[in-house]
Amino acid sequence: MVKKRFEDSTCSVARALDEVGDWWSLRIVLLAMYGTRRYVDFQQQLGIARNILCDRLNRLVENEVMRKENVGEHGCRFEYRLTEKGRDLFTVLVALRQWGDRWTPYPGQEPMDMRDKRTGRPVAPVKVCDQDGQALSIRDVLVNQDDTDAVCDAED
Amino acid sequence: MVKKRFEDSTCSVARALDEVGDWWSLRIVLLAMYGTRRYVDFQQQLGIARNILCDRLNRLVENEVMRKENVGEHGCRFEYRLTEKGRDLFTVLVALRQWGDRWTPYPGQEPMDMRDKRTGRPVAPVKVCDQDGQALSIRDVLVNQDDTDAVCDAED
DNA sequence: TAATTGAGTTTCAAAATGCAACTCTTTTCG
DNA sequence: CGAAAAGAGTTGCATTTTGAAACTCAATTA
Image (cartoon, rainbow over all chains, first blue to last red; front, side):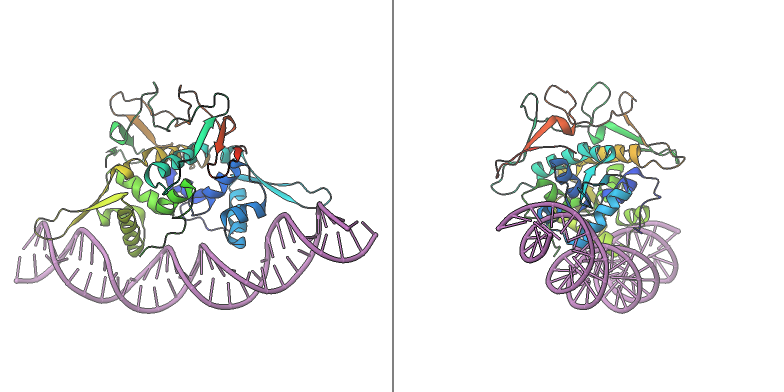
């Protein structure tokens, strides 16, 4: 049984991190988005210990971020694939990748290039917007924590 | 000295996770965005062990996600505040919060309410868009990993 | 000036991680 | 078809990280 530390938190960021907030899970999801599906391939691409990979994949399956599918011809051979819930981490991962490209550049490496398949043009930086599509920064928002009445003036 | 596991990875997601990818760091940054600045306040709001908090704050300062400021009148009293780099995690955190609200709902709890300070209207779901503001899903993009020539057809 | 608060260290136990070797199937290839 | 190789894990053990509580020591507050 996998221990869940923040499972019961009233903070949805905490609950999200409980499911994918360790060192490996998001990287596994990322590789899955790039097309990796097999245990050995995850293992080799990440250089993760096999038992840990096993644990993380089980955890992701348990939390319905991925599903495990038997693709053996006459026996068992598995593929791990993203569910709708897992695919919905796309935004988070792109935002994180862009942050990494901006703030932790790797000497001599270009930031990864991600493009619209149809138009061939690069993806725009992910932004928080209001309903008219106007970009909002941390200073432009108010957070209303529903149980307390605290209106928290988000700032740095 | 803090060990960095993915520091040298050519993957910017890995490098990003190296800086903020543990169980606590993003939650610390989140609280900082809501206005928390003092060691004890982080400690109480998170219920984190004091030595771990200490380690995480140092790590965040070392990576320039936060800065430590002496605010003592005649001696040392500290505040931890976000840097520009830390503030730029806003998008990632909002995306993660929205994912958590969608996929790990807490029984009897409303998703957190975040609004535009000026208009009072709720923040829109964060999306990956092309340059015209057209939303893109994982299936709509191509990833070009620059060192190999592999064009990876991102999928689930 | 004494008591309290802030901001940590230190110590020690418990849990998580990493590594290598070992299993047991399922494919593949001659 | 049978042997060898690949896939998908387990198991055991050493190393690291965490967590909890007690202990410092300076700065505020009463």
